[in-house]
Length: 488
Ligand SMILES: [Cu+2]
Image 1 (cartoon, protein in one colour):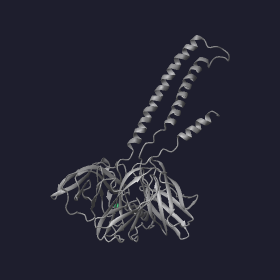
Image 2 (cartoon, protein in one colour):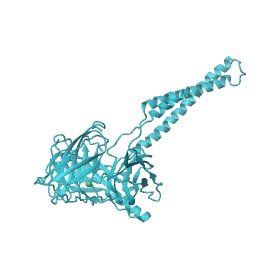
Image 3 (cartoon, protein in one colour):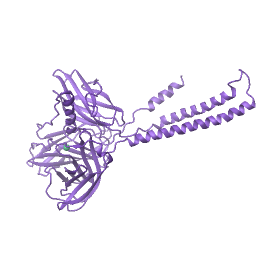
Image 4 (cartoon, helix red, strand yellow):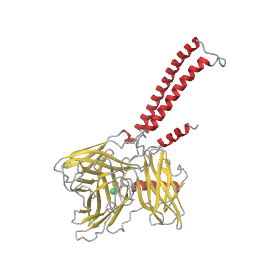
C-alpha cells in the first residue's frame, strides 16, 4: 500500500486539466435577470458530456440572496430539465456567483439563471451550444504509467499460469519434476499468446470507440461559395451541401436576416463586408457584391436553426475585379482599410468624416475584458447612435490566421434569436413570460462589448454603428498577449 500511494498520486496529477480553446466558444451575456443587471459567462466544455463553468456577476454590485442555474436542452425542454443548481458566492467577490453544470448532449441549451434578491426573483435565459470540439489527448506521463502497469499485469498473469501448472498440485516443499516444468513452460507460452490476442481485441475495440468520438466532433455544414453574374452584376452565391441539412431544423432569422455573411480579404484582413444573402431555395443563398478589391476572401456565414443552434459556415472565395453597384439590402455594409498591423491607432476614421475611438485597456488571452468605443461626428462632437438591425452596434473580431472569428454585440456573444426561441418554449411549457433582453440604446455615443480573446496573437476588429442614417465601420488592430502578461 505504501508503494501504491505515490503511484496513485501520480495518476491523479497526470489526469489534470487538458483544456484548449477552439474558435471562441465562451459565451458572454450582458443583460437583465428581472430587476437585476447581470453579466453571465458560460465556458462550455470541449468534450460532451462535460462540465460547463457558469459565472454570474451582478453588474451594479447588487447584494442578492442567491443565484441558481439550470441547463435546459432544447429538445428535452424546461419540463425535462434537471433541477436547478445553487451557485456559490465567490469568496472575496460578493457580487459574483459561480456554478458548474453538466451538459450531457451535443445540442443547443439555454442556461436559466434565476436571481433571488430584495426586489424578488429575476430570470435570464442564456443560450449556450454544447459541442464535442475535440478528443482529449492522453497525457504522456499517464500513458507511460499505464503501459508500465499493463506490462506488469501481463507478465504477472503469465507467471501465475506457469506457477499454477507447475506447482499447484504439489505438496508444500515438494519439487516439480522435469515433465511438469516443460508443461508449465508450454502453457505459459499458450497463455501469453491468448492474453496478447485479448489485448489486440481490446485495441481494436478502443480504436473503434475513439474513431466514433472523432467523427462526432462537430463540423459546421459544408458550403460552397462562388461568384456569378446575377441581374448583370457579380454576386456571391453560397450553397449548403451537407447530408445533415434535411434532419436539422430549418433556419430562422436573427436581427431580421436569415444569414449574416462576412467577407474578410486575405492575408492582410484589409477589406471587409457584412452582407445579407437572400435565400433562393433552402440550400442556395445569393448576395449582390458591393465594390470590393479583388482577391481571396474568407467567408464566414452566420446562421441559426429554429432549435436555437447557431453555426458559422466557413469557406474561401476569389472575388474578381469589377464588383460594385448599389446594395440590394440597405443593411449591407463594407469597408476597405490598411492591412493588419498598419492600423495601430486607437482612432479609426469613419466613412462620414467622423471617427471612432477605442478606449483600449490591457488585453490578454483568456481574460475577461470590456471593449469600449466612442463615436464622434465629422465635427468632433459625440455622435448619437441609431439602431443598426436592432442593435446599438455589431462587432466582428478575427484572428490573422483565420482560427478565430466572432460576431458580437453589446449584449455579448449570445444570439437574440436563440434567446427568443427558448423564451417562446418557456412560455409554451410553463406559461411564464421571460422578457428577452432588448439592447439598450440609451448609451449615447459609447458602446462596449464584453469579450475574452481566446488565445494570444494578432486580431482585427470591425465595429459597426449607424449614425446619420448610414452604417459606419471602425477598424482596429489588437495585439493580444499571454495571460499574466498584462498585469493583475
Ligand atoms: Cu450583429
